[in-house]
Length: 103
Image (cartoon, rainbow, N blue to C red; front, side):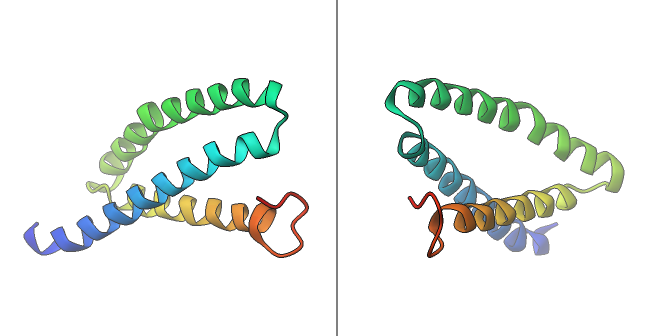
């Protein structure tokens, strides 16, 4: 509905921003964490997994949310929670003070 458009738009902007930041961090960190001879195959594999996840699983999860509840809200909140979890893990393993593999 029209009154739900602003929260929907804001949540979508947060999801897309988090997705972009996650994508950038993965493709920046891989060459820092792997030797040069292994970095290229790992980058290719990561890209293939990202295409599979976002090209297949995201629409599937949104469809399941719509069929279960009649709305896609649950899927979007689940994605936002997943991105928050990934951000926390990324911070813990790579950005916090005293991390064993700082980037």
